Length: 634
Image 1: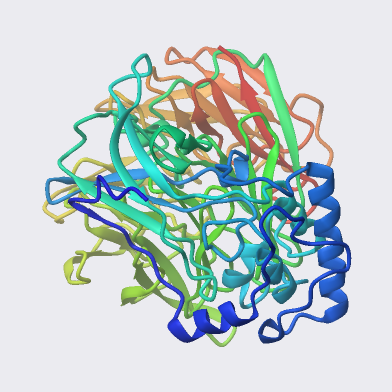
Image 2: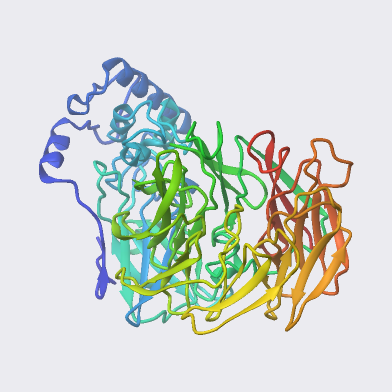
């Protein structure tokens, strides 16, 4: 097997322990060359795995049926080509002047992570049969969830039969200068087995001088060497010139929380789709990863403060198709976050933090002390996660803690805050994790957890209302206050200014590409006139007769077009009252898209000409019908 290209590289894999491997070899099933490896009712359960004999018979019978139907019994040296075998998370980041390429192994049907799809993979189905995403050992059980429905059952035998005989000998890392050029080989890395006992997919890293072949990269699995080498399905395409802000990858668009997209919103509302969501959504925004997939969570029972019931986490395509959904231990009430290294992180209200790959496979899951309610996670380029957990004293929230979680899911450090903190962390201009609690106290920490800034803001932030957050522009922190002002405070507390709005109930500020501050009134009274405060050194009040009221912020595209959602709070509202508007920079309403259900959630510019908004038959999505609306048009 080839080993070229390994110079200057690191390959991180965890091998099966020697004793476990020896036990596995003693009891694993084998099949003779050129023969059908499993027949109906044949085989016996692995005693070490404690698979019930009746279940084993059921599984082997189903495998024999699928193999016969697929004609895969005598397949040899087949490179995997199914979508479930596609590497979902190729990424590149800079470290000390070098480029670090990383990705994780996938092969549909290889449940024991040995690089081959054969009858031994059936044992994993038997060991974990009936387990689902709520199981304590889902990290291990998920390897056998071949159909990705969040449960191990008899349908997971099908991927084994469909890909029987599939194999991966290694990966080629390839690059090209543009989409019109051919891919060139950058590195050739051998396959090394993973650890099924830990539920960890093999992870690969290759380190080189910065991007000599780019700016587009992919990895491709292969079997055999020389002229006989055959290739499988290529990974996701990684484009180094792609700006992460092109996607709404975290709460309010990016880690600056400014509601500003770097792609255009829809010019028209000509094309739409709507996906019903099971459960309720509480002032969440959908987010989008660099591959274009959309993510949003929900809670299924009770209220977000009752810790009753579990929830769902959805992955949805840009065409409005559900890719997958997973059950969570508790309901999800906060906006998720995605990163360019193939990680999607969300937290449920019970304090469980989930880190998933784009295909729904779990990198890790951790129970944090306290609760995660409204504060969304923040992820950096290498996969470190910053999140705030709420402390509970008696029946009330009393304080909060900021956590830094390393890419492997272990805690780097935690720092207590003096008050509750529903606000989402952000990076200041020094790339330090910064949070502001309900009392208006600001904390900044470097990567070692050392506090670098700590002071009280001149006015407490308007943080009692869900969805309000700080906005960052350069060294300035902008926020709406509890006394109807907008404050701009330098992050070192050296200067502060304010604008008095004279308008109660203001949302968090948005920033346009020309550094204008855009706010809307957040009143929920039945008043169809809303004030849009737009300032360039002063205040310009736009009294616009939009049909409804605001709660969420304003999404802004690079050309200054603004997208807002409006609604009326009554149970019965006139037709055409709820909806979403596109407002031009000259204050003209370009279009208004009416919705039957309320639109109390902030809209999201997900990608070129694609706008997303959550709709609900109730005011804040705490009950009733909830759906995700997509509007596309150029």
